[in-house]
Length: 497
Image (cartoon, rainbow, N blue to C red; front, side, top):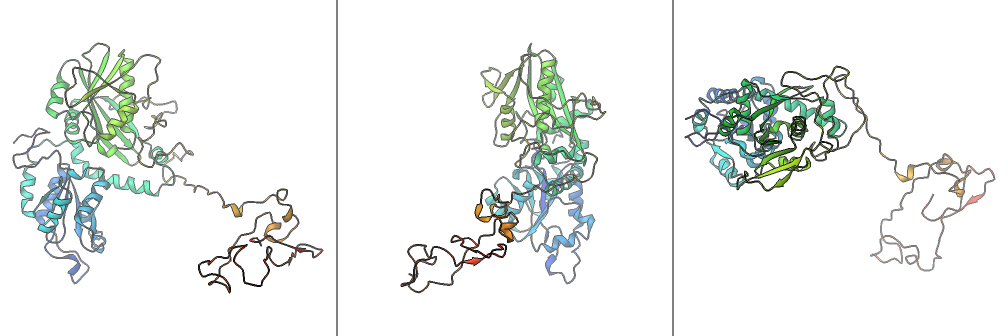
């Protein structure tokens, strides 16, 4: 068994595809049934299960919960922080396990196929295998074999901090739900910063990990072994991207391999970013920075190797929005293509955020602060998540909660002011009309058909439905307006008061 990223384990598990292990509660995490305990205290968790969860967290594997039980069990777990803090995006309800796994994957921003379910019930495992064929299911007795698949593998600093950063992501998502404004305004308020530069020697393992574990924002799926060999070859350079915001550090979230062996051209065999930054403009900023750097170095063409998959649709859309188009290239393999665009001086290029110079330094702006991540990205639609949104009012950049302001709704038509010049019949009248507002119009309700009216016609017609022998009334009874000093009678058209 080798420890290099991108290799499968002889036990049948692929550690590079496992990002989260989902645990059942009753009969798996503990022996008892939580809803049947005589007190409100939780059953005692199994020591070997907690040790397995901690061992996986040390290797960058998340843990979550999916249990068919009363939601109150999750509230009782909040009273035991040492147990509750081990799990992200837990799902405790009476819904099917397959639906719980879908929600966990959505909340964590990962693919459903990146989940592994540990459950003692053969029925629950069969239900998940039938509805989610890409999810691996395990009996609690198979957990030691799962841990063995992660032994002797290189662990990066980002892997050790992954659980904590996903917990910070929960806080970030909660703030986004409470934010009053568009998605783009929330990203501005987060004050995200991106730093790009050549990869340091201690950052290469993280770049290899991104190449092996990312699928949603991965251009070519280059294997870690191939990436390591190309990065060490002449004419190739490896770049990494770090990101941070007001909630904390993301760490290294992107890697790009640049091939400059062809004269006058920059070729990118691999562009990979973490799924944690999907929908936040980081991928666009990284790509645009590379394009601008290529133009500054004298390159006249920018090329990206793309191998379309079911998972990297977002990457394909980004490359097309950046102006890259498919070209006939002999270097492209049968399962991929090469996209290219011109970098001619004077042509329009998307602008990356200024100030991204190296992984450790930034070029400050005039006021001494680095530029925000989304500077210059407002013209790209569809890159900032499903809510989208245009530029809005400026937000408070002094920290803390944004000064939220509810957006006003246009008043209904009946409450808008009425100009007496347009309504001579309302001039000089008292009440609501005298105050410059149109009176509220109400409908008359009838309990049933009137005498002489067909039961089918519940709402009488002005001309047809009337009692026999009664004259057709086109106006309401004459009323006196209290605002008229002369006491003259005013006739209101039918339907108005």
